[in-house]
Image (cartoon, rainbow, N blue to C red):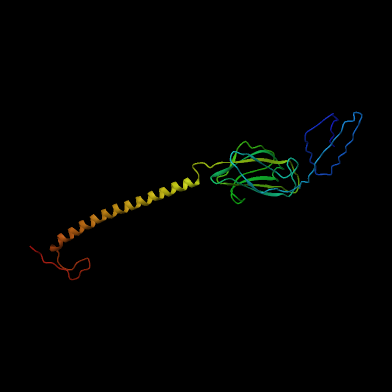
Length: 235
């Protein structure tokens, strides 16, 4: 039960949330001063045990907040929420977990480097922890997965996310370097083939010259397959 102390004037807004019925009782203690008394309130229905928006836009130089369902109230059992964080092209996603209160080893929060839970896992955490290390993706997308079991619940998690420029030495630059190395390797192989061919060509022509020089001294059948090749000694 919540009560407000009587005052001559009170302004402002106070928000009250509850997952059970609420009764509002208003009592005017005295009208001796004959001042007008006014009491205003608004209300809205809020769904519980729902993951909320699953596709989230990430912006540069702007930190946005993602919390567990129904935070700061306890989350529900048997939840499976998969959030996709998408940054602008040429940027990566940066996330900081500032609060974590989960059932240890049963309720988990997992961060993946990509657009699905089948991509490389960056981190999986459970229990009570505050992370001081920023989590970074290697591309424009990051997946945040939250799962709970059927027993104990807790307050949940608070995660802030933003976008920053991708590092200069990213995968595309690595691919360019590999491509340049491949081209250099091809050029080297061509030069090596030319040098090798030249050397073998010189050796061949040298042997051919020696063969022609010695032809006049041979008698009988050639050992290279010419059966009718015979020469008389010129001396």
